[in-house]
Every structure is written in C-alpha cells, then in structure tokens.
Length: 405
Image (cartoon, rainbow, N blue to C red; front, side, top):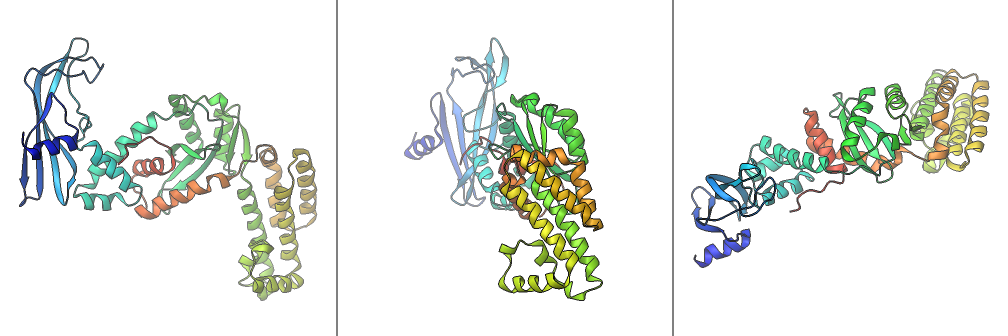
C-alpha cells in the first residue's frame, strides 16, 4: 500500500480485515472514487445480534456518497460482506461509515443535517448536487429515528398550540413540555383528535398519560373537549395572552362603534391596544386627548388595564377569584355589548382562567419555539408536504440526539 492509500485509509478509519484497495480520481468527471475490500477468510460481527467472528456468506458492492474531496464529489465503493450468523442467518454487514440502504456516509448525512438547520432543503440539494427528495430522506430518517428514542417519562405539564404549514393552508398542532421548553409531539390538524394522537404516541416514549397534571392552551373548543376526554388527570389553564387578546378585540369593537360618531378616533387603534408604558410621547398626548372626548372607549381601556393588573399583581388564587368577580360585575354594569360578551366568555371558561393563578403557565414559555417555527416557514416559503414540515419542527424545536458534523 502506497503512502496515498495509507493516508486515505487513516482518514476514513479503515482497519483490518478491511483495507483500501485502490483510489481512482477522474478530474474530467469531477469525482474521486475510493475502493475498499476485505481480506480472504475475514470474519465480521453480526449486524443483528452483535455476535462476533461470523463467517462471510457472500459479498456485494455497495456505493456511498461521501463528503466532497475539495470541490470534487467523493464516492466509497465497498465489497460488502454478508455475515452468516448461526442465530440470525445471513445479513448484510453495515460498515461504520455508512447506514444501510442510505447511499450516503454518516459524515455526509451529518453535514446535511447541519445545513438543514440553516437553509432550505432545495438550497442544500443545489449545494451538494443531489435531488431534494434524497436530501429529505436523509433528514427524515435521522429525525424519525432520534424522535423514536426520545424519552418523555418526566413530562407532566404540556402546552398545546397550533400553526399553519403555509398561509391559509393545513394546520399542525404542537405539544410542548412546559418545564423543559421542548417540543414533544407535532401532528396534522387542530381538532380533538390531535389530543388522542398525542396520547397514543406518548407511551411509546415512556410517557404516562395519567402523569400529565397541567395543560396550557387557548380556548379552542376542540382542544378543551379532547383534553377533558383523554388527559383525565390534567387541569386546564387558559393562556392569559389569549384572554387579553379577546379583551383587546372587545375594546377595538367599542372603538369602531364610537368612531362612527367621532372621526378623531380614526387611526388610533394601536394606541388603545398598547399599554401606557409602551406608548411614545406623541401617542401619550393623543391618548390623553382622545380619552377626554371618547368616554366609552376610554372606559374600556381602563377596564383592560385593570384586568391585566389582576394577572400582573395577584398571586393568590382566592384573591384572584375575588378580583375577577369584582371586574365581571363592573363589566356587566358597563352596558357595552362587546364587554358584556367578553364577560360572558370569562364566566363560561372561569375555572381554566382562574387555574393560571395556581399553575402560572403561559404561552410565553413557547414564544422561543414559536419564533423558530415561524423561521422554518419563512425559510422554506411554506410547506405543501405536512410530514416535511413536522420533520423540520422536530429538527428545530425538539432536543434530539443526531449525528454531529
């Protein structure tokens, strides 16, 4: 073996009885081909049971695409033996550098996974000069394997939210471990069946449905019914940001109604939706002026700030119960239909809203994850294939153990 073969052999980690047979560099084709063989009479470990010193039954040449040699494509050819195991029978030996039925080395696949976190799959396919379907297969294979090995035995609190795969397209429901801020499950849809799907998948990862005691969500009727039916030991906390969002919608409806009588309110929507400490100096002056002339919207604005203060300053569940009930009495007396409608919604979801003052769970925990999911959609310009979208969600938002480049 010449020095060149020795160098490549060391770089590839080739050890007896496997040896580097020859190297073929074709500059015109822009390819480097490395041929590997094994010694006559060599014995190998069974790829199924791990039994050592198995004899060779036959051999088949397999080819793996490896990392580029500078700007040139690199391929490993291996006269791959099939082991004859007394217990398992005849099975194809899998070398350390490759994955069975992959066509790519582990290092090449790890390189692809690294790129997949930063750029669209179509761009990766262009860079490595492979069809994007093959790149998706690499990513999906490793993500699915890593997810199947994920341990969820310690999960007791989950948050549920949904996102669309593309604007106006199908939805995916996301389940987050609220303690670890980690995505534990993602599935197509946003109905009660998504909760059932989670409950079916959870035990496959050592999770126990009966151990889930807290669930944070918006006020989706499907999520509520699915949780009550399936997660029987879980208490529901309605996310405070969704509650305040509905109060803001009531505030804006009052503003639009009053705007019909007072055109000065036109263009002031964002002033009323912000808290005073988030307003610019100009907006503060506008708020003071508008508040004097528009009694109804000013009144609802104060009601909103008061309701927010309950979330912000009250930590005791009993005190929160008293404060919310007092606020509801004020809302009913306001004689403003949008506010009364909001108060009715609070009453119908009262236990889940009050539960916040015990669990303290909010969607704020998932904000970092949600921003990453939005970045996935932006980077991929939406996803027509839901499975690919879910695959990327796991890659970005779930702590999976993947091959490192």
